[in-house]
Length: 409
Ligand code: 5CA
Ligand code: ZN
Image (cartoon, rainbow, N blue to C red; front, side, top):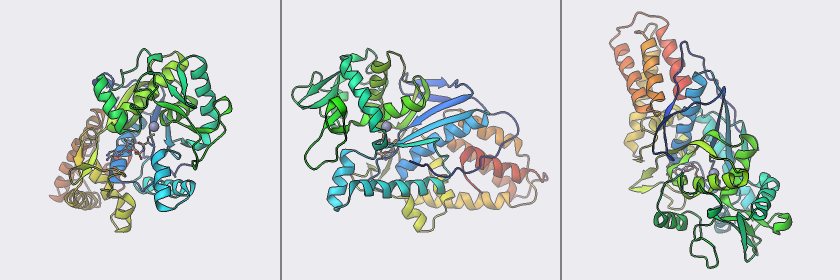
């Protein structure tokens, strides 16, 4: 499927910094060392509802990763999927009396608009799971033929024992894995599985559900984790730089994905670094489509909120923090945007080079966007006092805020 249009990323004078970022697998900070083409896979939406601020916060984090890389003059090969076939999508379609494929298409179109408005850089390949089924089927067959998968009443399960590195992404104990598996799409209680954690690779066709040709697997549809693995391996290959998503994906999704890929290829690791964004909540609960406590990007846009203010509301929180959305968060972002716009509209400014370096340093330090905002705040306060004499400064700040933070002033 097609992605969305890219906004320009202005080039900045000077040198970008290498990114130091928290890696879920090692539990520590690592300095990323991508080649001239940095490779990033970020898990995309399940399109059964509109993009909420939690999704947007996660995509904001990985947009910053790309902007830091671009600032180091690297190219970025960025892949994102759309989970356009999955249980929650089918359930919602039945609930609404909608056609599942139309629902997915409608919500994906809205997601593109939201991402464009927020100036999120588009992936080079934006890939639906459905269009990838013909590539997924032979992978599942291969896993089965090599003994890494087995059949249970027509369904095919991955055997977590097939990967000696299983557990290394999330680092969780067996009991926690079991609980999270039950919560997040797994079926640890199903009798007959070799290991309760084993995830489904291929779900045999059920009455009333869409189905695809599965060759020797029989008709059915793919499991969730293998979809992302097939897409990532096709476009990025093994040992790509960063696998990203919200912290709710560390287990089981990214754990299982890594094991699928490692069992399939015999290579390790699937991704060099696993990066997870915190959860955004509302009224004390994680914002989630199933709970219905959502603030939609598209609704804010309809209410005439400037997308740059929405972006500043996201940037005001460290990407790894769990945080609560309130109206005050948005009000503060709106007032910051107004202050910054007024500051860059003056003919002169105080020295901007040092501010650009502060933004660079803050972002390189585990994407510390709040500190980057504080640096621009200080510059804007100096501007308000009319202290500047450099006619190039306002333009440089505008370009830096655009290039590094994705905010158009
Ligand atoms: N389609 C799968 C990934 S393959 C999926 O998780 N889709 S999703 O629509 O549920 O979420 C899309 C992205 O937003 C994921 O990276 C997820 O971790 C993240 N996300 C979901 N809810 C929140 C939240 N409340 N706060 C922050 N990020 C969230
Ligand atoms: Zn995924």
